[in-house]
Length: 178
Image (cartoon, rainbow, N blue to C red; front, side):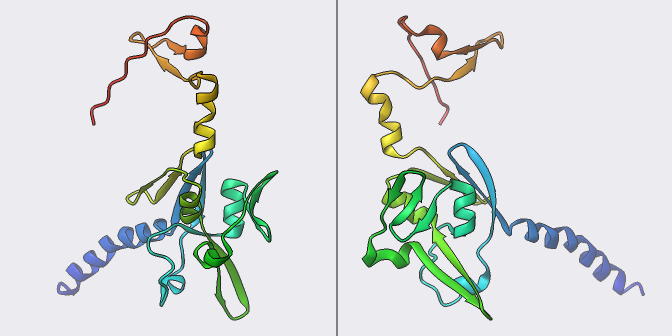
């Protein structure tokens, strides 16, 4: 019995690690400032596949839930906005996988972002993908020369918004430790 106690203790200690592995099956997408949890790509998806390559593949249902975009015959669309996918490269963006009659359509959101020149940041430790504003959204501020509004606290903790100073000259000094 004493011989098996250390083995039992190691097995019990390994349970939280195994439970943690289940947590890693979820990933988070932050798109348009909204966080959405999506499932991980199943191992069968990556087996014998050169299409994954570290990109963010999600189901088309998750694409719609996380971003509002839908895959349509004319392209990837949200409301009146539609981006056609290059027909010669369609397999880089959309593939169908599955077995036993359950086919699932997968979409490569990171390749789509690259095509649109949309900035993307990925944190592997947190399994989180952040998609920044597309260039045309970022560049809208250049047409008016008006900075986007933001709110920050002063040294006493009182919040101040940039919009509070519209029409006045403002000097903004920034600093970063990195």
